[in-house]
Each structure stands twice: as structure tokens, then as C-alpha cells.
Length: 490
Image (tube, rainbow, N blue to C red; front, top):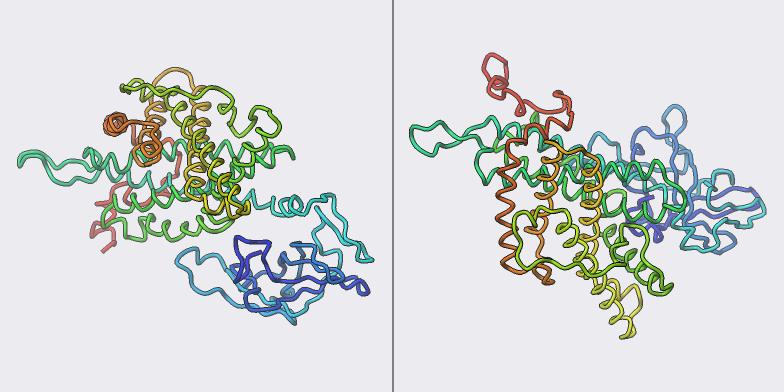
């Protein structure tokens, strides 16, 4: 699908497939250098066949982007005539994946090689489709990408878990400095500052793990009616979870000090290997714009039909504005009602503000696309608000299914730390006036309290991830023995 000149904008790809009705074949051609296929997995060395996304031309008319099966090598691995293939070159990571570039010089494929789930070309050249609207047809062509986004989102959580399991275990065994000359040196994770660095990341990965599992179940049980919701959830979670993975890995690497730079300790390698997740299968910034656009469309539809909001967890918009207490005590800050009320208030207000700003631009004669583009700051805040509320809501539903006891208490700590840190790190709560300066200060104090309360459970939480020892690194175990002269590590 990807070309040198077009990645996110799939509609703009330049490869052309022209139908020859006499031969009943499609002629696939790369008309210019920017149309060369790029980053194609498996292409440079091994692939024998590929799916080519091309602009379908029939009798001089373009029918938009379609997909074609084409052979590019014979059974002996020789590149076929009129096809040129080159390697993409060395990458900062993921070099185990063989990415290649492909040029087509008027190769021919049979009519049957058009993937015709959504549309087809009859032998006489007549174009037929089960979907009349070109926009909906294009969306249907791209719907298989959703599975990739679900997998990437879930995978990024796994990698964050590995990084945190290593960094937390190291923090519970590595010592540095003592408070007095006679005291033993302190464990890294006994320092409040070290807790503040790692434990909020641990809370976030636990809540995001719930969200990833929710997304997986939703995708497995999908029905055609759910396709819009799946697209929005997978876009929001793919972007948010992969961004968070990179933040987590960087902090884990630094929390391991110089040892974090060793290849065998894995975290540095993960940073390079998984950096690409924020770009492939949908650029994260573009995906989050799609989320805010979809919410805008939902808002307009509800207004037009004069019907309540339904789906995407937006039902809260049908009720009254939540009221936030003036003075926030520790028990209020940790209550699920306050947390959901605050997140819902932010999402509701930002959706209203975003819609009003877009309407203002439209009233000034700007196109819908230009109006949405100019409102990007509110769009970013809205997409983040939607995603954070979604993650919290999913985790709360999982938490409610756990019987009372010690596990439920740890889940409450994780949830509350996730919310408090999200407030502490986001200027939106102050910027838009959802919380006063005093309340934001209370939230910050609560973060420190929650970190110290979660610290005794940190090892149990990373152990609960169930990561096999072989997937961790020497830093997670006896790292002194691993570096001993007798072990041959010198």
C-alpha cells in the first residue's frame, strides 16, 4: 500500500491498474519515482507474491483505490520480468524485517486477481460494487487494517510490561547512597523520586492492558454494525498505547542507569525496535485526528436527529453536567465517581468547544476540511480526553468484577494513580478550568501518597504479568553474578 510519495494518504497513491477488456487483464504500472512501493515487508529478498494497491482505471475513468494480487518472483526466487526490487536499507530498528521497494513496468495480471470483496470488474469492463458511496467503499477497502492496529496496541503493552518488569526488579535490588554514614545504602525504589518515575508507568500499563484486552474481545466478536466503533477505538488505543510504550521504555532505560545501555538488558533494543509503532498501520497523529473527527460527526448526528448519544461510551453526554466538589480530599480523589465525573466533564466540554470552533470557521466561509484542520489544538485535547475516559471506564468495569479483598485494593491504587498522574501531566484541567490551582496541588500530593502505598506491591504487580524469566534480562535477577569474572562476562 505504502509508496515513496504517499503513506497516510492512501487515496493519493499513484500506482495505476488499467483494465484491458480484450485480454481481460489489468496492467499495473509505476508511472513515476514517487509511486514506487516502499517499506513492503518481505519484498527485498523472499516474497513471491504481493497485494498491490492501485488506482483502478477503466476506459479512462478512475474508480479509486483497489487491491490486486501480483506475482513478483518465480519459485526459484528470481525477480520476474518488468519488475524491479530494491532493499529499503538499514533501519534504526526492526532489521529482522526485510523491507523492500518495488517498481512495476506494465505487468499484466488476470482479471480474477482483483480482490473483489467490495467491488469487481466484469469481463466486459463494467464496474460493479455492493457499496454505492465511494467514501464508504474506500473505508470498506481499508477495514482490514483494523486488525493490525489492534495487534500493535496490545503488543506495545506487552513490551512496556517487559521493560517495567526489568526496571522495577532492578530498582528493588540496586542500592545507591545512604542517609547517614552508618546506614546501608538505600534501594533505588525506596527513593520517592524513583517511585514517581516508575510506578505511574506501572499503573498506566495495567489500565492500558485492560483496554487492550477489551479491544481484542471486541474485534474477535465483531459484527458489521460494530465497524465504526472498532475503527475509533482501535485508532485511539493504537496511538495512545504506542506513544506510552516509548515514554515507558525511555524511563525504564534511564532508571537502569548505565546497565540499561547493554544490549543483553533489552530495554534499549526495544526502544529502537518499537519506535516504528507510532508510524506504521496509521500515523498516530493522523489516527487521533480521525478520533476527534468521528466524535464531531457523532455530535452533529445527535443534534440533527434530536436523539440521545449511544455507543462509544458517550451516553454520559445525555445527562447533566457533572459537578466537581470545591475541596478535594484524598477519599474524593480516589473515588471512582469523582474520577469518571472529571473525565466526563472534560470530554463533554472539549467536544462542545471543538464543535463551536469548527462552526465558527465554517461561518467564515472555510471548507469543512480547512475548519477541522485549523481547530487541531482542541482536536488533540478532545481525542486525548476521549481515550483517557475510555481507558478508565474499561478498567472500572473490570475492577467491579473483582470481589472485595487485597487484589481489589491494589486495583484501586493503580486506577487512582493513573488518574492522578494523568491530571498532573495534563495542562487541560487547569487550562479549561475544570480544577482550581489548589485542587491540582492536592492531586500532586496524592500522587506521592499513592506511589508510596503502591511500592510494597510493585514486585507482585510485575510478577502478575506472567512474563517468562527468559524474556527478561540479567538485570531482573542476580546482576552481580551475571557480571562476575567466573561467569565469563568480562
